[in-house]
Every structure is written in structure tokens, then in C-alpha cells.
Length: 113
Length: 115
Image (cartoon, rainbow over all chains, first blue to last red; front, side):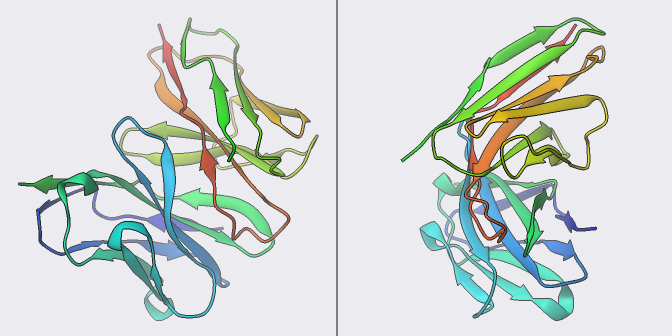
């Protein structure tokens, strides 16, 4: 079975500061990993995904994530956050040949001015 | 581009009632999903379907039925609404075809309240 843990339900960061949102997955094989974002009053949309190759993947709006297999982690990072980054961020996992996609509980990010 | 349309946007039901939510996509995607979003619990997979007439149970399928009679549509039925239940049901689709690398495209959601 596959699962995702996002240990931080809420994170508050000052505008211009760096950001890391944590994600740990559980899957016995090689996972495919995703970060989705839900802006206020909008639908979920893909931020970035990893399925092979370079473990550091770049996404939209300056976000990146690093797949660390030894730690079962796929943390999301951004060097300098903007007020518009306030949203709920979801980590998700799937696997080759299996269309089941499992999401974590989400992390609500608030940016302080 | 395509769109996913969920109807209705808001659904108010009575305890014990059977309620049906509908989802249509015009991406021509193979795979469709139903997720339930509760505050603090993230998205939990109810059912998914990899092709017309296929149904796969997710982690939260008990208390729900699903139907995929056409490639473009996927409906979800709450078999017996629970009192004071409140949740948002999200429909999504992806290209599918067995790789599971594909991006999910989400609808705007159906917000359920049970009196």
C-alpha cells in the first residue's frame, strides 16, 4: 500500500524568506511523486512532478523539490516566498502501472507581510 | 484545453438520503477519479476508473457507489447520507494509459451538506 505523510498542517513564513514543506511517502517500489497547490477559491493544480532522472525537479513559480530515496522524502522548497504563494499544498504518490494516486493531508501555507 | 464540469456545485441532503454527484470531462482522458476533501484530512480517494465501465475502489469506497458508462462522464452516489456530514467532493481526470506519471486535472468541486 502507498501513503503520504505531510507532518505540518500549517506553516507561516515571512515574505522573502525561504520555504520548505515536508513530505514523506511510503511505497515499497519506485514511486512517482507530485506536489499540487490549491489557491484560495481555486481548483487544485500541478506544481511539479518526479518520476525518474535528476532527483531535483523544478516547478512553476520558482518551486523545486528533491527526491531522496534513502529518506523516503520529497520536500518542496522555494528560495524566496511571495504573498501570492499563500495556499494549501498537497504531496501525492503513485507508481508505474497503477493509476491510483494517493494524497497527503496537505499543508496550509500563510505568508506574513 | 479542456475542462472538468461537476454538478451540482452545492448539494444539500437529508440524513439517509441517496445523493448523486456528476462529473464530465472533455479532455478525452482515459482515467477519472473521485476524491473527498475534508478539512485537516486532505484528499482521500473514493473511486477511480481507468476506462469506460471500469471501477476501482479507493481507500474510502465504503458508503459510495460509482458509475462510468461513458468515457467522458463519471458519477458518484452517496448511498446513505450521514447527519451533519460536510465535505467537498472533487472529480479529476488524467490521460491514463498505464503509466501513472500523468497530471491530474481537477474540477471545481461539489460541496455537500447533510441536515
